[in-house]
Image (cartoon, rainbow, N blue to C red; front, side, top):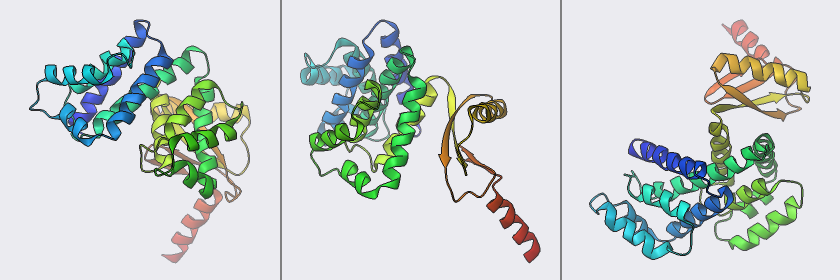
Length: 269
């Protein structure tokens, strides 16, 4: 999101955090917010009415209550009221913000249970699995397929291998709100990282890193970026040696292939 929508998203996330601090059930809040987002996806005229700057905020709140009163909890209604009172650059930014607030609530739940590291790792692993399996990625990302059919396939794949919060977020991810499953999983990973003011570093190596090596690399990157770093490690046999690290738009490539390319360029000059 850009411009005014970015500022509005911040307010929505702040309201979500406040509701959780006041004792709202994180799972229920997350489920309710995502349900609103899905409803708004299929109703362009409704999204327009709830985001039109010329419509008084009080009127938007009344419309919101007429649609969702009794269907969602008071905490979700409070967050939604905040959302419709903000300015959005695009009508789709409203449901997108509610989805991110939903993810934030579920992430808070995982953090309170001590499972946030597992959640981040599970989201990354599932992203890698779908990237490596085009058939599975297409089946789960097909917006024309019934949602329940995709969620049934997902349940069969996951079994009891992941915690409840991971399963919930993956079930949201296959709802088809985004252009691709890869994109939505990246958004969810970013929200999880931002929850504790950390950054994601993706590391490509030829063989698995030991826990000691992972910790040293994470600590070095944390010092460099002045933030906690969560490592996503990709074991790639094509990496002959060394390591390639991506943190946001910054890439550090010290692999053997990179050094060979640099040497070749110098010889060609």
